[in-house]
Amino acid sequence: MFRKLMTFDEAQKAIEDQFKPAVLGEEEAVLLEAYNRVLSEDVVSTLDIPPFNRSTVDGYAVKAEDTFGAEENQPVALKVCGIVNVGEQPKVVLAKGEAVEIVTGAPIPEGADAAVMVEDTEREDSELHVFSGVTVNENVMKRGSDIKSGEVVLKKGRVLGSSEIGVLAALGLTKVKVSKIPIVAVLSTGGEVIEPGKVLPAGKIYDINAYSLSTAVIESGAKPVYFGVVPDDKAALSKALQTALASADMVITSGGVSVGPRDYTPQIVDSLGKPGIVVYGIAVKPGKPTTVGFVGDKPVFSLPGHPTSALLIFYLLARPLIQRLAGRPAAGMRMVRAVAGARMFSAKGRRTFVMVKLEFDKDCRLIAEPVETGASGAITTLAKADGFVEIPENEQFLDVDEEVAVVLFRNVSGKV
Image (cartoon, rainbow, N blue to C red; front, side, top):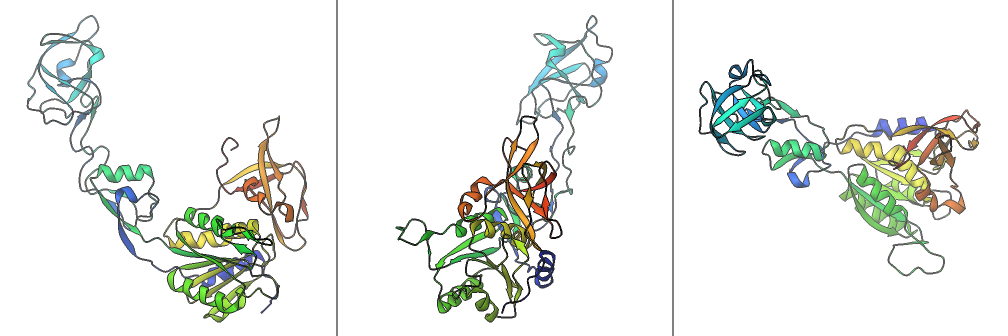
């Protein structure tokens, strides 16, 4: 079962060669529940927005030609013949020499072609003095000037954020067609792991990976299903994996992938269907024991038990596949430039990812400081690291004060 370690690039290619993203279909989502979903079809407007000519100021609707020549010392006199409020249909038709009081957002009455701001007028009963002339369509938002009927407003594949939801609401929609959310089964293995909430016996640790990985699955646009902790038992693990494959579009496991006598996960995955394991070990640090298999067209990522290694490999290899299954545009991780705060060494012959935290120094330089990732930092690295720096296989180290690219795990508030 053990094979020569693949390079990181070879592992990516092996996964890509096997991955055939299935069309998961579409469904209708209620608009208020459509946030962060992906449109499965173009949205075409069936109406003009705004649906009528509307005033953009508080003031008076007028015929622009009636105000020509108006000046501070020589105002034009008009007769006020009515008022139009927001949400009502104008009942007046403007004649020459007349004006209609209007508020911002109200429809422009028939016969008017501009609006003069109230600040540029003075009124006494029904007589209005205009001190500044306006041109045709001044202070007027024309019908369809924002969105025209028949226009493609949002394209298929768009991820719906708050602004997109607002646009859909402006079109009068209450539902929208979106891509189905991929289901990702997440399970942990190991005799030493128990679920949080239970009493912690001697020699046991709480399950970190299932929770960090499930959250990362959500961030990637999919729905995690937690299958709990599976003991290091061939029959139990085989049954759990078969159930996970039957109910999910992808499976992610952690632990049980090294060279220990009870590390069964890779051989069980390989036995469940073709093509089986396509990646068995990658020349990277951390994450060397990672294995990836396919049972039919469903990917199975078996990640190391070390929390930082598991999450890093998830971001590098599993996340892009989940995004594609979800119909999302390829979204790489955000990157910033910084300065190395210490010399960073690579592992010989392996692509090395150094966890770093970011801080500004007294000269306002953004400093990338390495974070302990060994035995003493297995847990705290997840909270301390803002991102990672990549060192290629053919480089021995990155020197202090050298400019580096830091790939961020998240937005770093107050730093970048």
